[in-house]
Image (cartoon, rainbow, N blue to C red; front, side, top):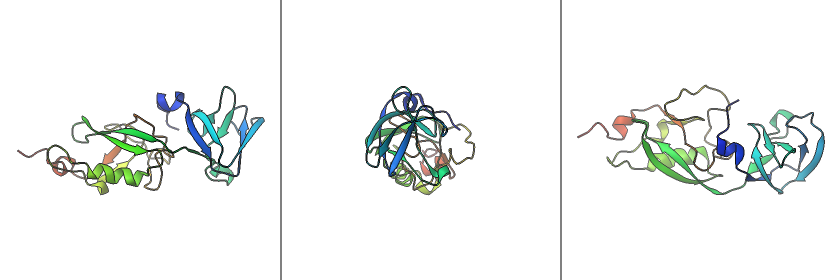
Amino acid sequence: MSALSSSEAQTPRLWVVSHDRIAVRDKPDLKGRLVASHKRGDDVLATRENEEWLRIGRERFALIDGAPLGFGVLLRRKDEPISLKVINPVDGSPFFDLAVRTTTTIGECRRKVGEYEHSTGGRLRWQSIVPARGKMGTRIIDSKYNVFEDAMTLADCGLDDGDEFGFAYVGDAEADLKMGEG
């Protein structure tokens, strides 16, 4: 399981219950004592305890994804605007800030990065962008938590305002961005 960013772990965010009913427990464990519940459509202000659990207040926890129990996603981030940092894959310098929403999909982000024109007139090919958890220039361990699929939303991926939109570039970024020219 990957570590959460400090903003993700400490900043309360609005989540919405997307299942008929969710259990709120006294610890982040399915065996924790049931202390409350919420119904579909309820807003919940919470921080992430880890990849699987939200902390609601001091001693209350809710499971985010009930897939292991056969329920699917139980809670989703509420739609709100965020900005992600995009790093130049050639030299690691800041590239641009990507203005999106928590409900924007990874596929939409790939296309937006591909639409951005570098000062040299070049563009990255969106088809060569492989989004993943982590920062540019670091090795990404292949697991279901680290590689993002096009249909996933930024909220599903745990990406938040100010985070980096990390990706591997499988093309020739220097040629695509026309950075080796003139």
